[in-house]
Length: 104
Image (cartoon, rainbow, N blue to C red; front, side, top):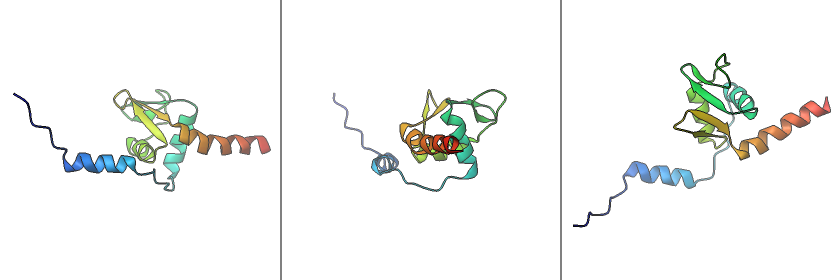
C-alpha cells in the first residue's frame, strides 16, 4: 500500500522561501563585529558559555552567532557545534581589515 505524499507545513514553506531570498545586509552590532573578526582567524567552537576560539574565551553569544548565520556571514556545522565564516564574509570583511593594517 502506497503512502500519500506528505504535505509541507506552512513553516517549512516559509523557511524555503526565506532561504531563496538574497541575504539581507543589515548593520552588524558591535558584538557581531567582534565575533566575526575572531572567526576570521579560525572557526569558533560551542562551549557552555557561548562560541569561542578557545576554552578561555572571549565568548560570543549564540544569539550574535545566529544573527550572523541569518545574514549569510557564518555557517553552522556538526549539529551547531562549530561556526565558521562563509566565503562571502571573508571577501567582504577580510579585505578591508588587511588593507587598513598595510596602509598604516
